[in-house]
Image (cartoon, rainbow, N blue to C red; front, side, top):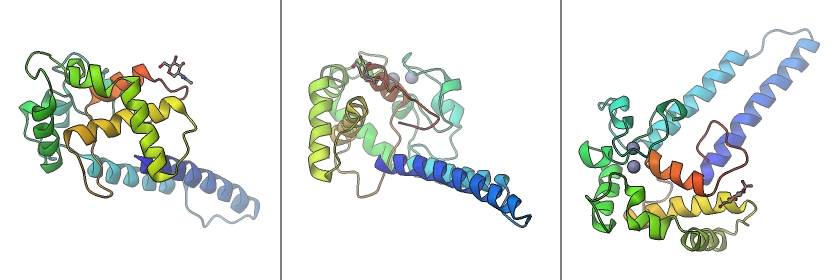
Length: 203
Ligand SMILES: *[C@@H]1O[C@H](CO)[C@@H](O)[C@H](O)[C@H]1NC(C)=O
Ligand SMILES: [Zn+2]
Ligand SMILES: [Zn+2]
């Protein structure tokens, strides 16, 4: 998840660099330099790679079908990113291998599977993963293991909850492997520990 921060910072840096270099170049009266469109194209390519990396369903499955909310707890589609999915999709559609690990893990760990329309209503989430005690201990453990100090408490709790969700359902995901989490879960976590500055990317 840290790589997302890095990715965002890199994009800001890249745009800043290109705008700055344009200014310098135009000052020097040279026009043989990358246009902003090339920068945006690079950013698009990086977003595509990111999207592929996080993917839970194969490209053959219609992303709109995957995103269509059947759990009543996903945020509006207009506020989502292209590859987002409803928690119900993971049980009704055929996911990729990573998604299968997530689905099977949830089937083992959900306490009342089948009695709630959304996983966020299951006690596994509502009484455990999404509680302050759990998110905080996950955040502090992560900080201890990585040496990264906690500077934004709410952000650390959100990531604490995301990591705990993966740890609980899948366990060890593999070094550098990432997975997109269900929209309703991410949305619920953001409601509990809001950020003062949400931007375009997953935070
Ligand atoms: C952090 O989350 C709490 C609720 O858990 C909220 O009251 C507070 O405003 C949030 N802090 C920021 C900076 O948004
Ligand atoms: Zn949903
Ligand atoms: Zn849901």
